[in-house]
Length: 253
Figure 1: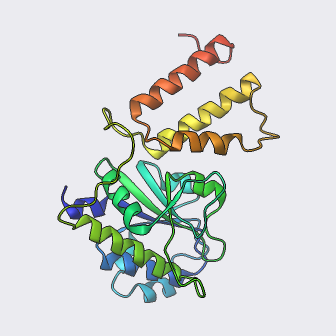
Figure 2 (figure 1 turned 90 degrees about the vertical axis):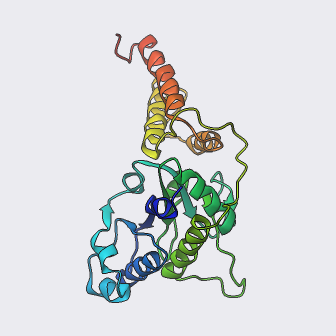
Figure 3 (figure 1 turned 120 degrees about the vertical axis):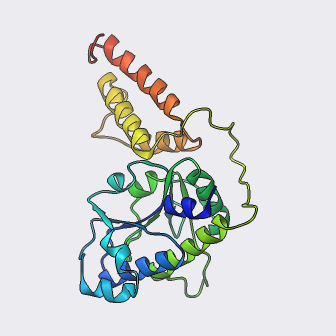
């Protein structure tokens, strides 16, 4: 696939950025590597002159940025999302190295839009935000001084995206699954399934939202091991709908 087309399918998502200057630095980092789709989730201060100043030639990326209230909104329409995390989260996706993880991201971009998800400068990503992603990546740094500026982190991963997109023979990442026979389910379609499943489990008494425990994170991890197709999501939701009909909580055809 055309490298520019692959890069055009990558969203850079900044969750709850607190400093407008870092947003501008991220936009500049993106443009130098040929990426342009910037998403801002609940930014503390944007637009802002400091963001424009730090963008230096990439103000057009800032002006085209899409602002959302939640990560779920920013991931609507994507088929794969990678979270940047400094550590392995309990029940979250396994953390990979940048080169291998980005290679997987570019493979998924052949199916549709994908996303690189970055957290707040101080707190990083929440566990819930991590659970919305199918993979995670960490950037190896000096253990004696491991702190990376948000703009620098964006630069590193955008560079890896460009190198992978323009490689003569991009590395093939074994996924342990058969090739897709129907289109890949988008992130919002999978989230719709999770919401439907949770509703049915509450109805049947299997799940108590007042005492959630770790059930939903474990279910997310279970389905996160494979890339669900649209047909598969439809089948699963059909099973749930039939359960609702039988229990008197669904609509009878």
